[in-house]
Length: 276
Image (tube, rainbow, N blue to C red):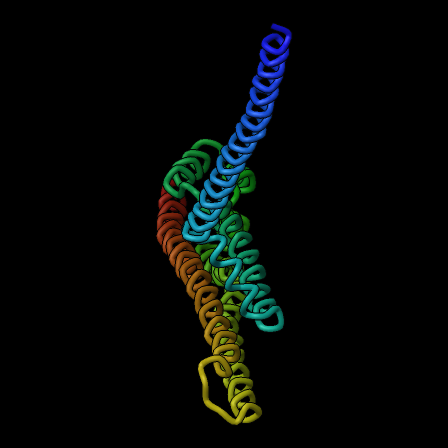
């Protein structure tokens, strides 16, 4: 009986020990499987993140640049030594254009309205009132009328000569600074062409130094050459458009002055005949 109890006791201890060992072995295995699963998930997440980043970078590289960005980039690539003088031509030219536009707009006058006021003043109040109206009205037409009225007492022939002489002076004032704009129009592409010639010389020097005609050797000098020409032509085109606009504006004012002068002389003749 004691042997049976001892045997059962030993068998129970062995059974408990084996169970503990098996459970101990199963737990590290489960932990190992969990760690492997977590590592695989982290690797996949990292791969997905890297792929997403690469796709974003590719999308940013493929996104088209705006015209302003492209223009700025090409301006820098052309070299400050040649681009800066061309830029100065554009800045000075546009400054003169703005000044002329403001001056010519201020020189524009409603000639028909002014003629009616002058004619009414001559009939009702006399030459002094008409001169006061012309003095308070801006523009070359009013200035011509004032000069004519100022010499009204000397006769119509003197008045006509005075109007013609003073009209020539005012026409030269209207055309003031247009010659400078024309200079910048001619100078900008010439500077661009000069940059082209220098760029070609640099390209041939690079070919001579390398001893080989390859696109990589020639590309640098050719790029500078072409970009300076392009920007010079762009500046010239912009200034030429404004120059032609200013010329048309001056011609319109001059034609208005001539028509108003003829009508003004008719008013003076009519007023002189009415007093006889």
